[in-house]
Image 1 (cartoon, rainbow over the protein chains, first blue to last red):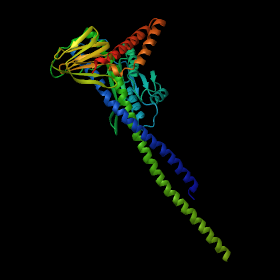
Image 2: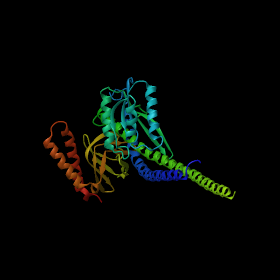
Image 3: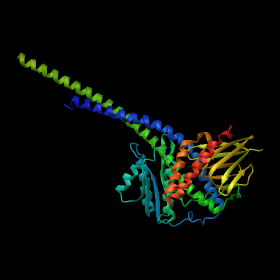
Amino acid sequence: MAKSTRDIKRRIKSIRGTMKITSAMELVSSAKLVKARERLIRTRPYYYTVHRNFKETYSALNKTDHPLLIEREAHSSLYIVISDDRGLAGGYNNNIVRLVEDEIQKAGNRAELILIGYKAIDYFEKEKYKIVDKFTGITEEPDFKDAETIAYRALDLYENNWVDEINVAFTRFINNMHQEPSIVRILPAEASVPASNGKQLIEFEPSPEAVLDYLIPKYVSSSIYGALVEASCSEQAARTNAMGIATENAKEMIEELIITYNRARQTAITTEITEIVSGTEVLNI
Amino acid sequence: MSHFNLTIVTPERCFFTDEVDMVIVNAAEGEMAVLKNRAPIITPLKTGKIRIFNDGGERVAAVVDGYINVGVHSTIVVTNAAEWPEEIDVERALEAKKRAEESLKRDKGKDIVQAQLALRRALNRLEVAKMSKYND
């Protein structure tokens, strides 16, 4: 006989339990996704504006002799990797970690890491990577202050020539079904092509250098903030999808198990009847 | 007076966006009024007030740090935090003021800058909170 009916029944029960958890998590994260999307829409103007202003200033100055903007030979790169704290989000963490690893191999220089979220920390701690700093508990509801802390840490390394470029690796939110892991270089910044309406004269007060000194940290922290907000939105979307699929799978498994269960029960009954019939036949002789 | 578009953005939200007559900000080099067709300028702001004039009315908001970018078509203020007087949590500001004053008495050295900045923010918030009567 295959499996006893009792065993199958027990399995069905346990899968039902799992399914309850996954479907609850799906509901929770889809609610969080709605909130995260609202936040994304609210905050996008901020970092887009800062980004644009910085590029404008940079292009308008027409100078690249600022110590923070000079292109240096990349002996070492800093990667700020944004993962999540909890997992259970399908390929979300895996994709970003793998992308960073590929990039490090490709660049072939010394890599320094600032890790955000337990999942990235767990992974990179096992491998032999140099970890500069770790942050946890900030991915779900990113705060501008956290972004600033990370930015100053990164700028510090950059100013002291410990790293030659700053990259941020995060998952860009495209829509609920689609999120794209990507690596963006923050510093040195590439000057954008000046706007098509030709050179416009912009005043800088107190001086272009002072404005640039002020704008660079702003630019770095707002880029990191933007990445955090995008990532938190992607995280919730990835989790909603992963949990939805898990719930579907559990449903399928239960259906299959119920068929197996019925079959096993039928077999047991048939066996019993056969036994009784053959028993009476023996007695008749 | 002719209008121009003013936008104030913070990390949390787009705080303000509308046509205005004039805006007065607390720039790094002193107070600065911006009218329509002002020559493009970018300058950092100090923690302080921002006064928005429109159709004879005036609105005041408290801003923390940031910069103003006057462009040809629009003027943008980017700041870490912006609040209307009625949004300011006076109790929290008072507490922050007390905390900052205490640490100013106690500490010397590196933290003093932080405490001074915190005190400035708290005082600015309290001042602006009192100005709610200006707003219609």
